[in-house]
Image (cartoon, rainbow, N blue to C red; front, side, top):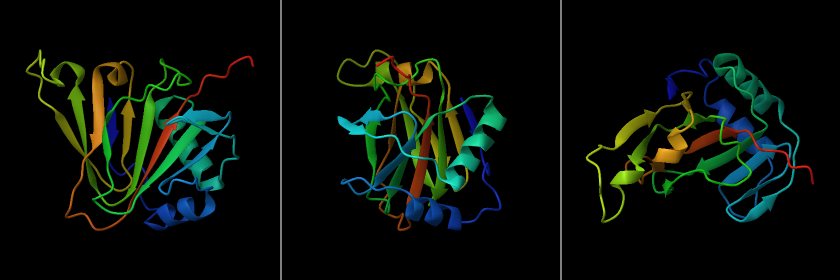
Length: 178
């Protein structure tokens, strides 16, 4: 895992606004995407869309920092601390399991919790403590394999957070021969 504070520094909060305004919204308020090729997320097929200059610039900066290439970004907007994401692993079949997942945070700082798969449920077989990171504005989190195999992650409710947050999740999608 790699965590870089101030990965996007000097860009200010206007980056969040420009990303949100220039991107295509889905019927479900809160998420948008840019990609080539298309992708299925939460059971909904997303069609390929061109990259905006801002998202392309951020993607290139991630590649320069990490040495990894990405062909997809999911953009989630959380209007305040009541918007959240439950514990999950990114397990869509189109994801390249050998590629890290890169997450860039813009806007309000939020806690991000990792919980080992052996500590979930009634048959807790491990004493591994959850790991909490504060994802501040401009930070980059790179989850290298096999993090996503062994650890669930979540963005819990934080009632005191009143400002919005945008999360950019960069992935590599496998291109099928179809």
